[in-house]
Image 1 (cartoon, rainbow, N blue to C red):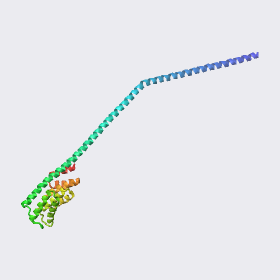
Image 2 (image 1 turned 120 degrees about the horizontal axis):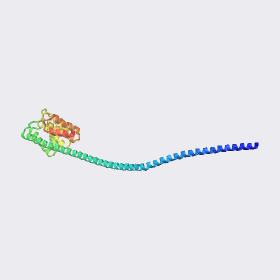
Image 3 (image 1 turned 90 degrees about the vertical axis):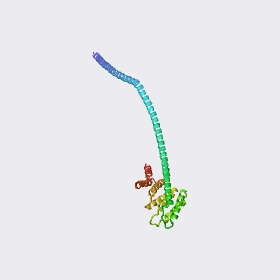
Length: 279
């Protein structure tokens, strides 16, 4: 009897334990099934998201590629336009430089022509004055007696010196004019021909293009207070400095003639020369 009770108790225990195990197993399966369903749901959501992204890529990628190609094409067109503009700018700069060079060359040519015209014009004036001086000598207008030469000798040397000047025999002309100037050096009363001799001595050096010596000699003309050749000498001083390339000094001398000899026949020439050198 006792043995049966023991066996029965054992059976009950085994049965209860089996039920517990079965219950635990069944519960575990339910939890696993629930977790599996949750994972499957998450996988489905990820698949939907991936499908959505793939759809977006299929729609957007062609648009992006088209936009990129258009951008590249536009950039190439811009670069091409930029190259064309740069070439045109370079051509315009070259043309402008060429025009400036031509303008400078023309200005230089004009200045040379102007200087030649001024020199030619002054040569004509100089010739006119020399003929006037020669006429005065011939008519006996100058009758000044000097310490070394009598009236006839003085006029003869003066005429010979003028003739030598116009024959471009500047050596003989310089010698003759210098003798006349020296003969009158100690005379307090200025000889009627001494100022002319000084002026034409200056012209000799100017004609030989010895402009520095010419300036010094032309300045000595102003030592003769009663001479009518102050404006002549002033003009030639300005032209001498211009020929030496001393533009500032030349402009200053032309301005001096404009200021001090407004009634001079050389006033327009001095004014034009001053204007040209001030540009």
